Image (cartoon, rainbow, N blue to C red):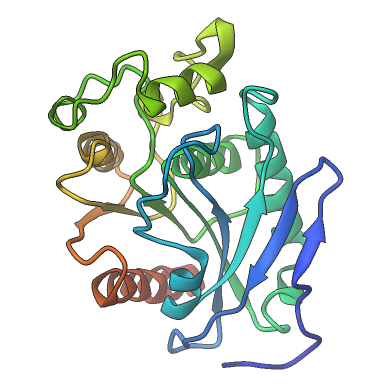
Length: 258
């Protein structure tokens, strides 16, 4: 790994109230450019949903990403778009001084997240495209929460979607009384324009309640010309996930240099 320059801070507070924590890459990607990834943890928006652990900061670092984890405001105290606004500030902060996280090496910028964090990451990619934000090399979405209707076959098989379901409660808290299901940044799966986005890796498990909406988002991206791949993982915490992530980071970082 390139170790030039000063070490990155282990933690950094943002003006809007979020906190960034750093997990340095533990594996090289094969070139000078390093993958700098803003990671948004899951928890079903409110933090009440257990993580599926298809990806984690430690796993991403092991796969070769300099991973910056954002602690963002959560509902019900801070519904949409509070957490997303802080995430966009964090993304711009990383893009403004990428070298502080990569020891001065060139950086390719990624966003990623799990379940509710995957929703925010997908929305960040849309915002970066629409609002002249940072250029992204890719996005990593692990079982993203993308459909507040909760009516997919995978949801029904898991007996999820009723009023007591943590997904239902999370969406209700996030969208608030206005039920902003028509806003593309709140519900990226419902966005009418998905062209021009960075390559996307979607990690899922076939037996998970969020599997179907993960597949649907990948298909919707490809239908509008944005490259996307879904990886259905069996070994969610081991070598299969790490290998898949490493291959994606290597390829997307190489494309960003091109």
